[in-house]
Amino acid sequence: MDYYAIITFIIGLPNLFLPIKDRFTQKELKVIVWGGLRGGLSIAMVLSLPLGEQRNTILIATYACVVFSIMVQGLTIGKVAIKK
Image (cartoon, rainbow, N blue to C red):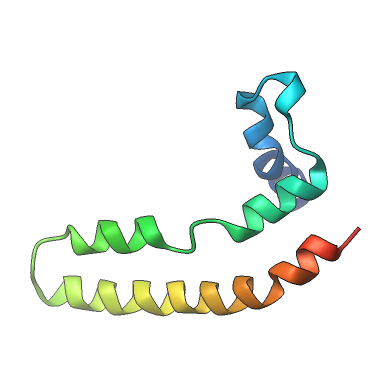
């Protein structure tokens, strides 16, 4: 699988929906994609599940992934923004 092509497509995806004059540079797109929502949608979806033992397990796993994402992305966003 060509991961470079997939990542390039995901990073360039916002430009498909913008007029040519408002398009982002590659550097700006990388910062936008790296910043992301950091799990807001994931937590909302898990909280909408019906109560039960599986919901609690999924909720704990989701929160762990979101906290990890916040830590990794939050601590490295400066390096991504500065990188040429």
